[in-house]
Image (cartoon, rainbow, N blue to C red; front, side, top):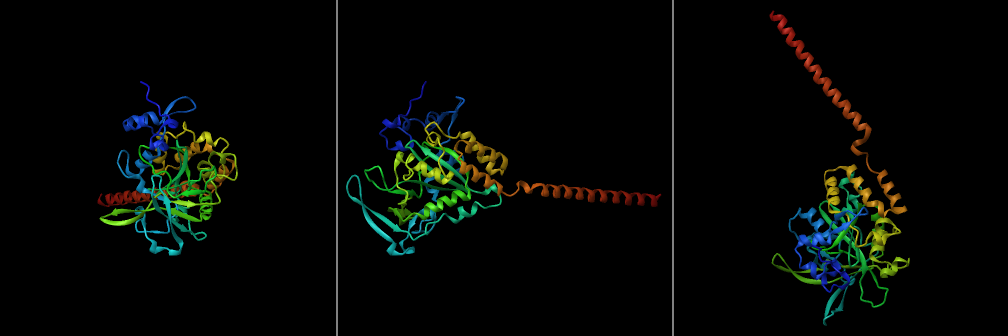
Length: 386
């Protein structure tokens, strides 16, 4: 029996941004993934595309184990107006200069208003987290951060970073409700709050390199304000003010232009901006690379993570080469080649191999000499007895 198809353009459901329609919301989760995750490769063979929410949930909580994924995702830059455990996002105006915070009234669609907090940044105040920036220089390659490009049917493109069991996120979009084609650009502090039933496909995976960090920091340097909402929440029986996880880093130098940005060098959209961060420029066929028929297979991604966790460098690099090839630009290819040059020798190289071999020889020789001396002593004793 042919499964019902999801017609995104005609779907009135609120979850349309994730690629779900009313038909698929009524389907069991397993059947939903069988129909929604199904893709065809160039050879015409079927495969299951990995859905980011389910994949990230499995590597954080374990395969098939439940967990609230949204609360395990952190922004790539620390918010200057929060305190306490970062996952709690507790708003604390005492840690910042009061003159930097303004409150505006944001109108709601159904009527009424809600307070919008606006934090004005000093130059260079917003920085990539130290734990991320420092981890890219770790001696062991497979202890360094991995970066993922994720796309949805909205369409939208976002970026995730995996490091030491933690997930970090960011993306680009717009922050105002202007009716014209040009809108105020914004970096989303946490992009795509993923659910395990969301159709958000992983289309590219790579290593987080110094070049990516540099481009991201250059973008953060352009941010002038942070806009965020605060709401009451219960934390261990205590009512606290909590910052909405999807805060906007306002970046006036990057005006949002939607699909028009594909051909206008002065405008930006989420896909163009993400590819600028990851590759330095956009591949010629970049729209095709993030299309609805694209998605890395679940089996391939799990094989990659096994190689990563088992420290199998060559297997991991071979898989990355497959992921990188369709997205390669002249700049990204040159950067990757330079990155590989600076990796420490795998296993210590030839010198370490020779040292190990000589050490084994010496150990064997010592053992052999002890055996010979023992035999000679026994022979001497036996001779005296006789």
